[in-house]
Image 1 (cartoon, helix red, strand yellow):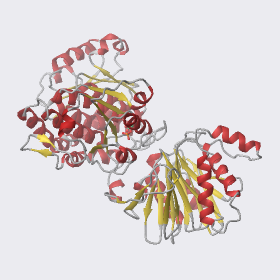
Image 2 (tube, protein in one colour; image 1 turned 180 degrees about the vertical axis):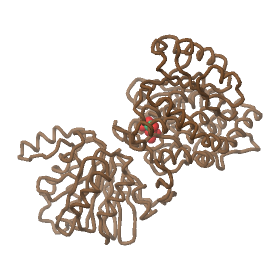
Image 3 (cartoon, rainbow, N blue to C red; image 1 turned 90 degrees about the vertical axis):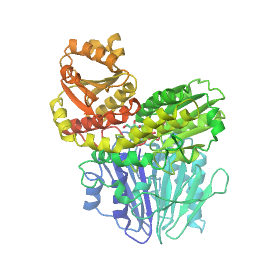
Image 4 (cartoon, rainbow, N blue to C red; image 1 turned 120 degrees about the vertical axis):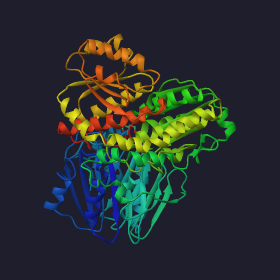
Length: 618
Ligand code: F6R
């Protein structure tokens, strides 16, 4: 959600910033802008719209020169998307430029004060207020010979007045060659190059230039030139700088031969499922093993209850996790929206383990839930995709998804990788309790069969496209299922609505009869997730109720099911598996169905309206 890239070095900055913006675009695409510094000249260009139609054209028509600069791609929080509200924003003197992710909560108050002091504002953003505030602090250090120090002190001084979250990058014509960055609650990463350095909110933007990075901590302020960077923590006045290595390639975040990132990521799932499994199956012990749970077997055995907190797609994964952990380990699980967990009274017993799930590792609601659990004295584990992300670093232990960079805003491969991680965790906990070796091995073997099975599902993409075309004019869809297939249906509906803008509702197939069945008519297709599992007969009865009301039925059913073809209008067959793994298998055709339907309706699949990857505001 919003992306920042900054460069200071010996090369022309604009092409590096523009390339970075393209790699960051999934983080926000309302508008974008750059500020490039050529000695004491600041060239600022900003434009509403996506990168290629907006800022890239603007820069081609009106280029900027200089070897350092900052850039930003925006997902609007304060102020509608417009050229004026785009970042960078300047201070009152026009000498200081700021790009900012996050939300300044007390900006109205600051704005009033600055207005009274004679400031005028070009935009309605909180960031412009912050820029003016930095400028006001800078006045105090006007005459200091150490220009880098003066800019750093001005930024630090302004941030001490600010309530809210920020990842920010600042440059000034008064301090050519110097960039100042700071973070609180919004990620910021230093990329270390040779005679050049980078600042970004997302490693994807710089991995083509360097793999050596420092993940800044909350309250860190970094002062950076081409040759060096110094970090100080506003809270402690000291800072620990740990250099990490990025483990993925620039190509991993390229589209390759695929028309969209989402399609590429759907097709990566045989490999990402394999990666999520790698090294984690212990055949001999008929269990799963993890390197980073940071809990002893005794501690894990002592867990009497689990709360899983997450948001969006990860919340759907959590619901499936509830079925998995309760089914395989018999440990009671409660699933909470991360934001609800933080703000309502949730009594958490001492013997409860809190688990958060976040693909990005930066979702503000989920980070808050993690911190809230820790504040109450609980161990909190996390299932995370992005290595080095805030949640990954702050959790007491956890499991990486190993899905690689996910650029499509609608999550696909990270979702299925989460389900693999949850299945393994359920087996791990189950084997410490009463789960038999035989039953565990059945599920483990079925997990190992998944990559080939997903490959065969991907082979049905053309047939699924035909099906999507058949239903492309529908205005409403239901996704229905029972047991494990209920949360799977919720996720299927979410995928469809977020990328095709078709109203889609995920519902329990059994609950339909208590109300929503009133909505069923000939024009309301129902996607039934109905594998041959323990709920099959019951779901079939619910399917008949829909048929009796003339609702068209698309079934996601198991190969070899001879009955389903007779009752459903269309069927997509899933390979036979264990009950616990049908959510993974059913999700692949559901993703393809949403994808093809969105393409058929001319939607921008990778950048759906109003959305952005990773929501870092509360
Ligand atoms: C939808 C989607 C979102 C995210 C949600 C939480 O496809 O991806 O619903 O799941 O915003 O994000 P993470 O998992 O990064 O915490």
